[in-house]
Image (cartoon, rainbow over all chains, first blue to last red; front, side, top):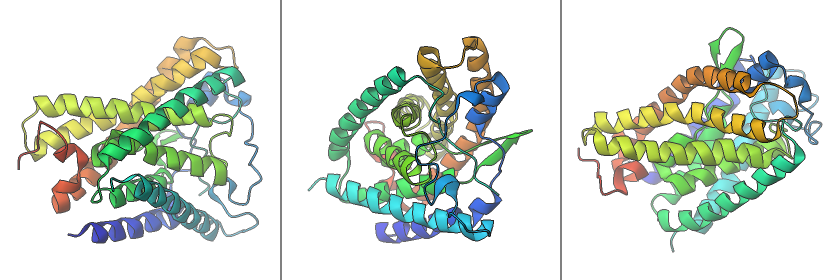
Length: 95
Length: 226
């Protein structure tokens, strides 16, 4: 299989996971947040300075439909990560 | 379902310790930028780009681990074995920066803390653990994937210990350190199983189609024999 083909399949799989499967992810607090609550330091958390940004918390601001909201956030995240990482690694590779 | 916060928020750790880890992380990212240049050839560079994207996507999938809690992939072990430790550090760092800047996940002042315990520590630790077991285990697919499994599993409690060290140095709440350590390592010892499963399935898939693209299988004196 060509590298190009693997990258194509990987990108499609990533978009599928970020845009569609993510809706079914567990909404329970993750390990760190869970421990923070159990042990008692969750109250020291402060909102990020960017907490009011349009995609905060993997959603799209103002969109009621959670399924579409998380899908938009997922696709934006995949595209942005791709732009930065492909750019960076293309720049870094041995000439 | 709302995606929970995945990373260290602002406020958990004091400003001086956050700045200290920003400096430490910046230093390692600098080393990684230099190191990746020597590890990345034409063939692997696109795969490195994909690794970051895949890790971002997989981190959105929190899996339930026990009553009331969930875990998510870190991706350091996956990245280290697939594209090499230095490129791996960079791939996870890119993910964390996108998450902090675009999705407000992980505090802005906590970026150095998060990069250290998720992009640097588990990636480098997983790499050395992987290499150690790769040398001991049979030089075949089963041996390779067993080394991968152990490295991926252990990288998660190691990251948890990393957080506990940060908390020991600069935790803003007054809590017995033992409590934090036991709780962090306890929960993350379960989450590690998910990390190991996702990592071994992904590495195994790439091994099946293009063994020559898997960094851990090629760039070594301990070459993976069929």
